[in-house]
Image 1 (cartoon, rainbow, N blue to C red):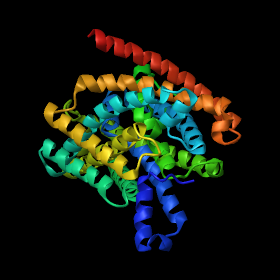
Image 2 (spheres, one colour; image 1 turned 90 degrees about the horizontal axis):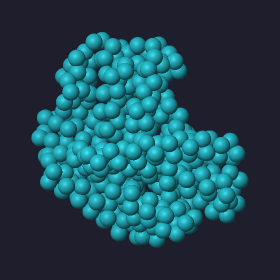
Image 3 (cartoon, rainbow, N blue to C red; image 1 turned 135 degrees about the vertical axis):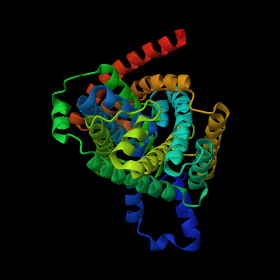
Image 4 (cartoon, helix red, strand yellow; image 1 turned 120 degrees about the vertical axis):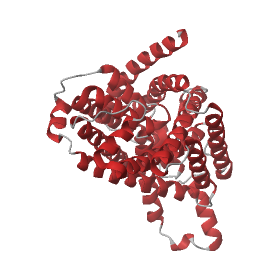
Length: 421
């Protein structure tokens, strides 16, 4: 049931031309795609914005931030398990499914995702520059250009899909490994963090809302699921593997969030004074000296680069269909990256007002797209090819949907405030 327009299929056709495809088991390719989809979701959710937010909020409320992390992971479970299951079984991207349910809705969703993805990608590109500065001492604009060249190369090589899967997995493991090292070095109060995760001294609704919007909203919601759909790992026959993959992806995301939080918490608990300009870099440097600063650069760069890749891939997937040729979609992705880089170089930095505006849009995108997901799971068994949707998962989805509606109302208020300002 594989689509003929996926990057992975570009590789298959190229391999077929020289006979290589017959030498490579299909299961190996499928497992690599699933692993890539998992890490694409995780690395898209843990970008430079999340690292910055984690540092700021940990400094603000200390170990109590563990509760916000836990809530965001639980919401992630509820949302992603439903998104992966519905899109995976239906074999459609979110925009295609929305257009099937209500003609035109998919293009409305695509427009919102495209704007939000473009603005956030400028921020992600800015993050690559900051990462190369801390890692190698490169001027940020130069580092951003080099990073974008790397991202563009991934979408221009013959086996673009396989390259995409491998790079996000490798960078994901690099981020986790280095952050664990810094977390151990900083000696965080793990016991206190675990207690605060369930019995927090402080519950800040604004922090929780911001964290959820930045890690589940917008294009991030669909990054992994769209990769799975594009690779053809779809249909009722793949429901079990889709479910396992979504759970594993969320676990990877949760580990990355928790370890980063513990690394920062250890530094804050030790009484380090972190500067306002780049508090996260200061935290890593305090924990492990000059080596820690370089490690921060690698982690921040990896987080930013994978977010550039994830944002570009997913955003373009919303303005194309599965009938779009692989070459066309890859060229559109490259064009998207180049346009975002040009805007970054023109503006000199990530446009703060636009980032805030796009962040508020994330809260609107989530309920629109997730309403379609829940509706299809509940009423449109025909779009799921007769698949019997699990009742417990639907109930969890409805509860998450109600939360997304509340987040959407909060986001509309934020957009109004920004407009009035």
